[in-house]
Length: 311
Image (cartoon, rainbow, N blue to C red; front, side):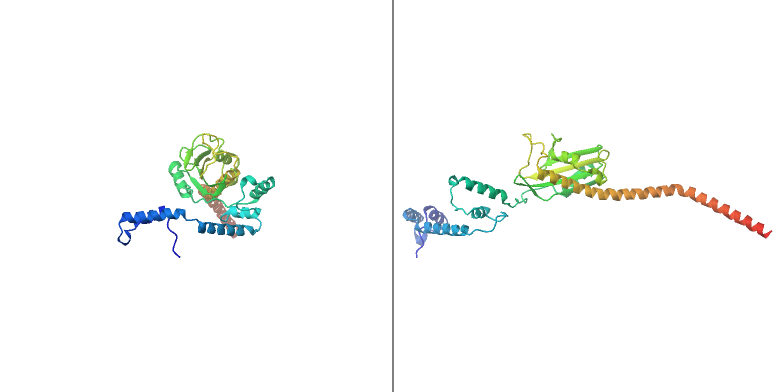
């Protein structure tokens, strides 16, 4: 019924925090603990081995029951579910796998789906901060921002944000692209970047009441990820050959364009109304004088006709 003696390290760790035992000097207490540790080394680890064997048997029993088809590996410990699907022993050495087993493992990994990594570790700029930055630096007439939901790029979480503005200080007619990766501006090799290619070739600006050759358009694209998929060793641009990034950038820019379209339509309606009022104000005096002259002539003609009838 007595507990097993402590190991040497555990006994010393306990002794460092404990006062002298039953009035014994501290040196004698340390010597006694060390003696227990030496004795514990010679005791067979039968209890530990029995517990380990029981745990191994329980694991094998758990893996022996074949679950349903593997469709989603987003739950905890997907390795156990994969091994259970293959009906292999958990301790199968890798160097003993045969060709058929390797093919089965490859097909299973190809068909299985794993949960997306969490994007809680990322720190995107945010729509509010991006809007404030654009307004501060460019002072545009209109600005819209949008943040896409987290996606997965080559196994790493990523968040893509975009902003589109019209007009602004020192802006030139056409499309000007501003690119950022993990909040760092990318200044070189922008011609092949995904933001440049998408904004100039894959966005139908006319559908959003924007004239991309005449209006002053600023496009802002920011990508935040634990591994930015740069192209080349210079790490100055992100290629257009990654479908997840390309589609996310396109969606984000289109969402910004939809916001701008609503504002542009409203502004143009107000401008048309002001133009109508201006035209009416311009021609009302002439129309009024013409109407007065016409009414005067009608009144005079009516008076003359009445006099002739009386005569």
